[in-house]
Image (cartoon, rainbow, N blue to C red; front, side, top):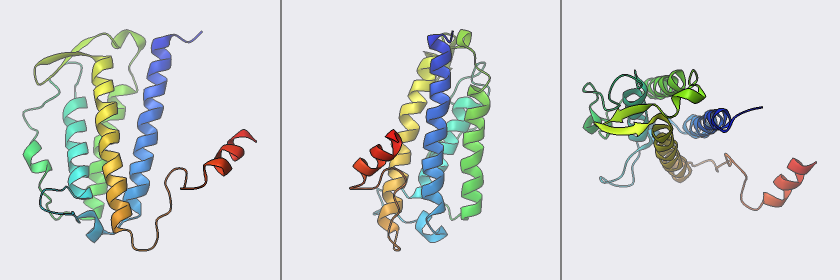
Amino acid sequence: MESLAENYLASIKKQFCYYKSVGDKAIERVSEEQLHWSYNDDSNSIAVIIKHIAGNSISRWTDFLTSDGEKSSRNRDDEFEDTAVSKEELTALWDEGWDCLFNAINPLTADDLLRTIYIRNEAHTVAEAINRQLAHIPYHIGQIVYIAKMVSTDGWQSLTIPKGKSKEFNAMKRS
C-alpha cells in the first residue's frame, strides 16, 4: 500500500510536469521578439521570467540536500535584466532549470521529506522546500501564459480548458 509520503512525491512530480508543459506550450507559441516584450519598464518579459525560473531552480536544486539553496554563484539581479538572448538559448536555459529540479526530486524517497535543508540560511524540510517551489513556479507560469496571450496576434488557442467549453470538456472526461 502506498504511503502518504509516496503519494505526495508522485503528486508533486505530476504537478511540476504539468506546469512545465503549460510553460513549454506558451513559449512555443510566441516569437523571439514576443519573448522580449514587456508592458512597461517595471514589468517582466517572458524572457526575464524564464531566466528567473531557471536561475532560481538551478540555485535551489543543485546539491540541495548538502548546500544552501541560494548559491553564491547565482546572480538574481541579472535574472531580471532582459538580455537579448535568442529563443533557442532561452529554451535551453528553461530546460536546464527544469532538468535540475527533476534530477533533484526524482530520486527522493519518503524518508527524505523531513530532512532539513537551507535556503538563504533558513531551515526548511525538504517537503517545505518543494511546496515553496510548487507555489513559486506556477505563479510565474501564469505570468508567462498571460503575456503570451497579450502578444499573440493570430488568436490564442487555450492551453487548458477553453473559455465556454467546460461542459464539453467535463462530458468528454466522463465518457
